[in-house]
Amino acid sequence: MVLILARTSVSTHSHTPGLRFRSLIARVGFPHLLAATLALVAATILLGVAAKATGAGLACEANWPQCDAGPYNLLPANLPSFYEWFHRFVAMFAGFAIIGSAVAAWRSPSIDKRVTALVVAGMILTPIQVVLGRETVTQYTMDILSLHFWTAVLIFSMFVVATALVWSASLRAGHVSAALGLGLLTLPAHVALSPTDLSLVSSYSPTVQLLQYGVTLALLASVIVAVLVGRWRFDDTALLGLLSVSAVLALVVTYLGRQAVMTYSPLLDDLYLVTALALLVVFGVGIWRSRSSAGARNA
Image 1 (cartoon, one colour):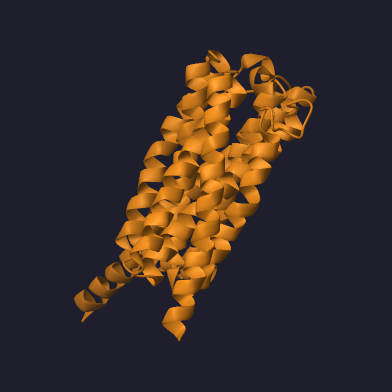
Image 2 (image 1 turned 180 degrees about the vertical axis):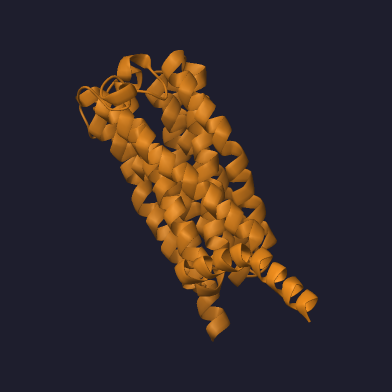
């Protein structure tokens, strides 16, 4: 009898941490945890853009991970240093959230394996992104800066896909046209904020850069959601082809838009504007086609 009680006690204690972890996830909700992680990743990217645009990337006296004031140089000494310090501060919480999401997905058998693979891949990329962030401070070359940005965009995109997957039961056919509509709104804003001949801004200020990259993230997220929900809710081959084309064009617009910022080239600017126009047409046709398909199916 004593032996049975001892075994029961050992078994209970060995499973308590796992049960507590699952109960915590049950209370918070994994979809909400993933959505919060996605928001932190987006905030980290935009704060990094702000730090670069204001020239604060080399603040903190080029120290990393320390800054240039306070105990052990952990705090910022001036406003430029604050921009860089705050970017690192939010990035730290984003990293914790990414790791927490990956651990939660790994330990929860009810989570879709595709979601688990995406968030675990994001967790693997996180230390690489941290090292690249350090290199932007210690070396600050354009190649490292670009790699740091595109790695962040990759992590963001993976978490958009993962978030859409966990919320898939709530996403309906109408969300395809809604997502494409968001893309239709953000694309002209992207062009208007880019340093091209069609730009509506006289100078590419830090505020303009922050707005443009915010629009870029919204554009990518809208296309990803449209493609995923379209594949789940429609069997219209033409519509699915349009959605696939929109994904390719959105990536090209994002790349060329960034190149327009980094290097002035009339040829790249013209290619960027032509691609943006093509994507605008695809968005419009995609909205019409998705509504027609949804109406025909309902009828």
